[in-house]
Image 1 (cartoon, helix red, strand yellow):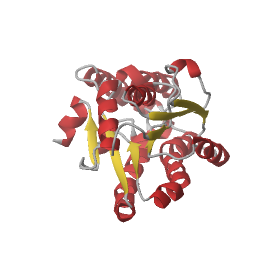
Image 2 (tube, helix red, strand yellow):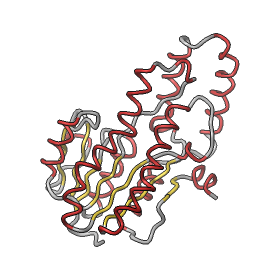
Image 3 (cartoon, helix red, strand yellow):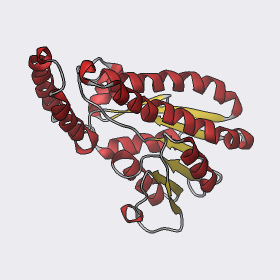
Length: 253
């Protein structure tokens, strides 16, 4: 794939990995369709190669409107996601469903929406941003991990059925990134922990301390993920799984 006249559609561009990836593709000459629930043109540099569209990946009508407005694309990066750090018993069924609706089914529905055009043109790339937590069990992350593990298994199978059509599927697996969603997850846990049975408190306190300590040692930087997303889109010979960040790479070794 050349890097001059291509178009990438990226979900979840209001912050973090999605925002930085959109900036990176613009810097490298691509046209970018940056999507977010509440569009903010001020987040990205002005460019005639940039479109910022409203998109809620949990709403089918929103997906249809955004994909129609985007027009032809060469790559889809499913980055939109919800992080969650909490004991399972303290996580409501509504929260579980919300996490899966965004992290798992949102990616499914985005892919379903763009596949007809990719199949018709006989080329394209689908990149799903997952997480390194799927490579090793960690406490207080059962729901988040399950949503990403489902995305991994889906992507692995999808890659097999789309390859004969000329469409590549790749997974980017970021490590812990305190600068983006990890710290907000920790705050969510602190607010949610009051709802957990008291029996969990010693375990929760210890787990939080350990996770925060480990996250501060060699955290994944946004540029690690940006580099992996770029490679996933532009390098046809890269592997299906692309760990991003030293901690993720260590787990994959």
